[in-house]
Length: 495
Ligand SMILES: Cc1cc2nc3c(=O)[nH]c(=O)nc-3n(C[C@H](O)[C@H](O)[C@H](O)COP(=O)(O)OP(=O)(O)OC[C@H]3O[C@@H](n4cnc5c(N)ncnc54)[C@H](O)[C@@H]3O)c2cc1C
Image (tube, rainbow, N blue to C red; front, side, top):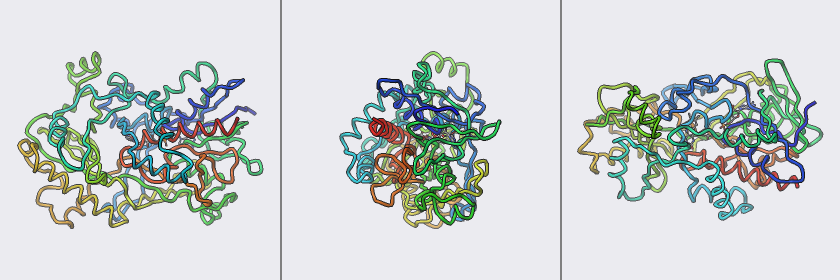
């Protein structure tokens, strides 16, 4: 038997932050933290380092390669749902955009905590998070971004910006760096394995069972277990540990510990609809030239330092987020003879909720992911408004001089019915699934404002799954904020 103070399950954005903070906590003796992350093959270094190659990481050995159920609202398509695997989790393969929580996001968190958290406290925590992660302002922007930012600078009711990125000198930065000091001084240990379920002793969580190539292992922790396996795997681990909807667990023969519909349901994701324009100049290189490589290697700049989703912002009373890319971008930038710019539009606060379900009690069985995009009419209407906004942005600003034509959906597709069909055919995940075991202060909420799992002493959750609602922009910064705040509270609870 192998025993430590804490076990952190999953070394993604949240897990790295939680483990780093737990290991740094001072006391008379050093805390010992074991981080459990499944083993995996790293993708080629060139794809991991160069921001412009991040799309090559999707579908690679660093991706869990999940897929959703087919959706009739998406022309019967099933979407690929990339999720990062390996130290750094989804931050290992993501688009690196650092979008600080908005005032509304912070207020949403304060409200969910029932007032147990305060705005100043969250703001102070976020300053600490930013010091640890040190997001970078982009050293290079494409012509599309320059033109977009200039054209929309005075646009009312909008906050256009070049997105800050989790980069160091124009190279991808991985939050696994937060583990380095702890690994060096022995307070953090990495174990390779996939957590199947938590181990109970009466009402207390005392460890986890993992699966690796040698079979099942039990790992115990004196002070408890923090789940940071992300918004898909965390609810699955909870359900396999007996916390979830009674019917589902009974059907699979899982011993029920806590009947709650709040685990696995309430799944939300941002959907992005690309509005693609052919433009007169600024073709983005889809192949690296010697000059571009040299520019990136020596200065961390140039097209290879681009994360493709370079700029955008919140528009129309924060209801729509825009991402601008300098390419013809549906799922991957298409190699093209001409120059293109894509304005991706998303509803920031989708109301439709989906589900994560177990298909078996075995941790190796695939999960059933039903995202249920656009089930709520409001989500479709806001996406249609997004297409109309993208069109106005190019017609009513200096961009109009530079646009050749609209390629997708195509200018002729201008009735609501046409746009609905285009959305069904072309929209994609923006890779932000969350809210699958939302935190709340009500007596029936499963995750409390102290991040603890109700009814499971010494069990906590601190990743994207506990978001009560989606953030308005990209969620990673807020997830890391939550993880930081969780570690603080967990340390305090253990004193
Ligand atoms: C392709 C892509 C692009 C994105 N782009 C952006 C962006 O530009 N900006 C932004 O703000 N957000 C972006 N996101 C979203 C952001 O990366 C996530 O919201 C964030 O990483 C969530 O953090 P997390 O810790 O909850 O989960 P993750 O970072 O996904 O970490 C979960 C970890 O748990 C591990 N794990 C899973 N199952 C188990 C198990 N059974 N046992 C042990 N470990 C397990 C996983 O391997 C992983 O390392 C993107 C996401 C993706 C996938």
